[in-house]
Image (cartoon, rainbow, N blue to C red; front, side, top):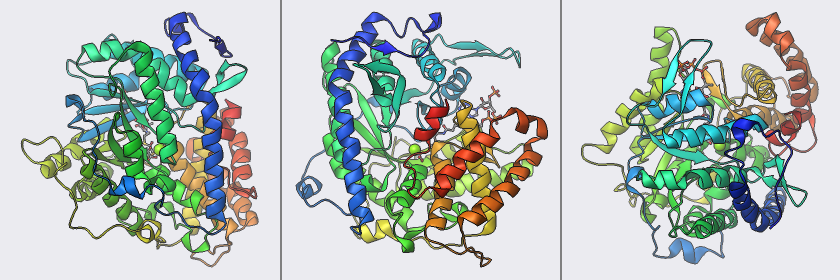
Length: 527
Ligand SMILES: CC(=O)SCCNC(=O)CCNC(=O)[C@H](O)C(C)(C)COP(=O)(O)OP(=O)(O)OC[C@H]1O[C@@H](n2cnc3c(N)ncnc32)[C@H](O)[C@@H]1OP(=O)(O)O
Ligand SMILES: O=CC(=O)O
Ligand SMILES: [Mg+2]
């Protein structure tokens, strides 16, 4: 077994994470699993080339027997049966404590969409997670003077690892970067499985951005191997898989099947899903999306996605999680009442469809989401697994791919610009989740903003005021919107920030001939 090489500084506080025993465990996993990732990423390109050439995504002929077969997942541990409200947030110390103390069932601690993976965030994130599992995590905030520690009954902890497209450039094996998701998974598992199991919980993971059941096989094999290496019974590690790419929605049964020893739920990761709809169907002029603000879960293609996910999960004994309403509380009471109303609307739609739970981005929304799901789940029940949706007509490929009606407006384009630039600026400064115009913005929501403009240019779409979207129009609006950002955030913050770099990155993304696959890949060069 070869040793890992670290390119990031190993501060003394990280020593207990990156110790010889843990590094040897990670090296063993990386030796076997890193080389398989290139082929999986290549398969994504091959599939995309077929779609670009005119073959729309569809259910796979070769796995029909799995979709039609009679099988169920292995099972769901007691502490994951009731997940009616989950909070999410990056693996910062204060966030972790506040999230575990919130009025929620689960905290999804995020190394992914909401984390800008600077080496220190990744390394300190593991320290924070270990301290959270041990119950010793605390913080004295020098700014506010506030003391933070865990309550008696914290939420169940689930760790979201990075997706397969993101390498971790600070940890190498045999001269190669290791997949970021493998690093997140392996160190969290190694340091915490014993304590978690002793508490009656377990090593639980959220797995993001899968595009096929073959990728599910990679993760399931990784989980099997991790269990074998430490002598755990098969299926001790549990996974919730985000269905947040368009290709994956056609393989939900197959993903559940490949993962059947480990999986407990699928989740409607709606923001990446919308981004993936844009990206996957980027060559189809009839499927260009309208303004981001009108692409809501009641649109037919998103409703079909939610309903099919619920039907597929419940048939196989898995939970069907809803997704994130990106609203965050407003300071003004009247504005906040409007936010809560929107959250109620969004969560009611999910609960009515038969989802077993949902996500909130902020503790201030937990009670609202909880009240909605309490009503639909009803007394004495943990979830809505009994909603089988068998009376529904089959959800077809056409339903999932249905074009989305709505206007493309100049205000929508300007808002996309301001959001994308501000998010990129935050991300390259090491902040992966920011409040902008009353919404939480993370890597998934920002992807929609920047890829929409690319697609509108690519297909020469007209805005509702008749202006044609071109590179020239984009650059003209960009100059104006940079001034708007400056006036909104103040000259000082603007000057001290990295806005001109962010604008250049945005220009590159928007005017390139080919759509950049993930904004976080080129932006990682800036960290
Ligand atoms: C598409 C997807 O993948 S969604 C999943 C990924 N995205 C996320 O997880 C988003 C998580 N949310 C957040 O990061 C934050 O809510 C933000 C950045 C949007 C806003 O955060 P802030 O500007 O700090 O909000 P605000 O000032 O209202 O916070 C008030 C308090 O709530 C806490 N808080 C806010 N959001 C969270 C959260 N998600 N988890 C725990 N605590 C939180 C803050 O730490 C703060 O605590 P304090 O009073 O002890 O100082
Ligand atoms: O990860 C969640 C999403 O909506 O994207
Ligand atoms: Mg996502």
